[in-house]
Image (cartoon, rainbow, N blue to C red; front, side, top):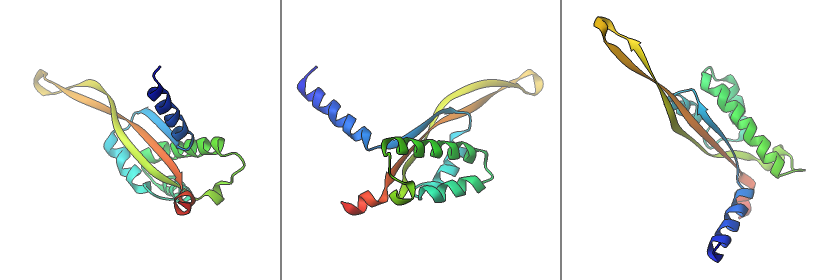
Length: 136
């Protein structure tokens, strides 16, 4: 392996240690419906976002609530001994990308068939500390 590749790999590993995220792959909800809920909590504090997702009537909010709890757990494993209340975590990024589509056929009048696309999505949540930004 070349020296530059090795240095770059070490830089990526260091960056990964300070990045706290969680991913949800192949979630069987359409990306459009998931983005509606994801846009509600983008840039918010973690506690506020959890409360909003808990109270939201949309079905996608349950999945995002679970994903956010997973991201918080990932943060806790990398920051042992630090309390969440003191860290002022917030949602730095949340992205919803389309995933595979299941193609189904529905019978239509006069012997025809209509194609139904059952969409799914990938969601990525990235957390960060507000206090870290202030100290810089």
